[in-house]
Length: 385
Image 1 (cartoon, rainbow, N blue to C red):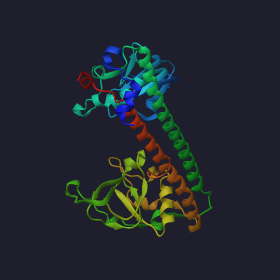
Image 2: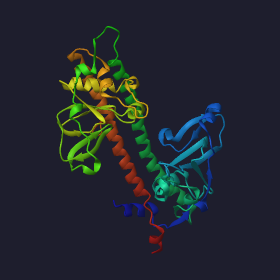
Image 3: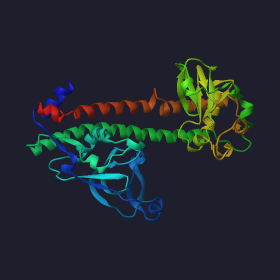
Image 4: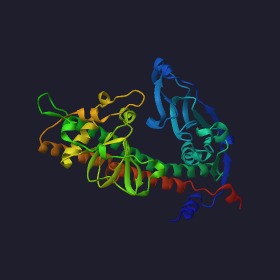
């Protein structure tokens, strides 16, 4: 069924009236709350800010500014234009705005939330390098009101759209929760498998168990790279694709970037295979077997590398410190057993081609498809025509 036929059936031939958000809602802003304020007034009521992690929550305090059903949006920064459905007792900071519907017999909060999840990003202003979506911009956002002459039917249509989208959202949430649980299980078993009692196994330095190939790596200035299909690696993974290669085979790359090692926003150690070019921001190690390489990869990603990072202005993990890292060295058979177990967990939790992440990505695409389909109302100019 085409999206036109679907919408015709849902709307049953009714008209759609467009109203700007400022005429049907009341907009407010949050207030400044410092980290010290959050600590000094700790409690059970959430405070939401401009971040998207943890549903925007940055802490809890012992009082609240709002109680009820609302929509909040991020006003400043990289997440400007992100909207959230809020319900209950909470507060927001000064980098958030709040939307309160004036007439609940005309508009459904969840319907408005889903609509703004598409529309608000179109109104973000990115001038001066700092994206913003302020109240004077939000109040101009057009909102579709189906069947405006029959409020009861209008709300029924909105509720049906919300019901369908809620079902997709719930499925994605369940999968994401499952993924979080699996990752905790993975971390638990990884740490358990890679922990040894004193005297249980011999320990060797990384320089003793791997061949360092750093002398072969070479950076290429971005403007001088010949484009191709060979991956060009840096501290955090693939940076570009080039025509030529330095390495051919299976290797372990380890980030040299101290800031990355401390923040751990990207993999610290990661395996590569096939032809590749590596710049001087990642160490290159070669191992005798797959099991040895993956074993060291898992181990390095599980430990604190802070003691091996040197330099204040530009902290880094230099070659000398890298090769001094102590590695537990069980038998080849034990390494293979550990790697086989962790590979299964890794495929389930981290692989982009299999496991839960792939399933979540597919469900998210499905949700976005139906969201856009269900909210594909004719624009005002189309209605007028």
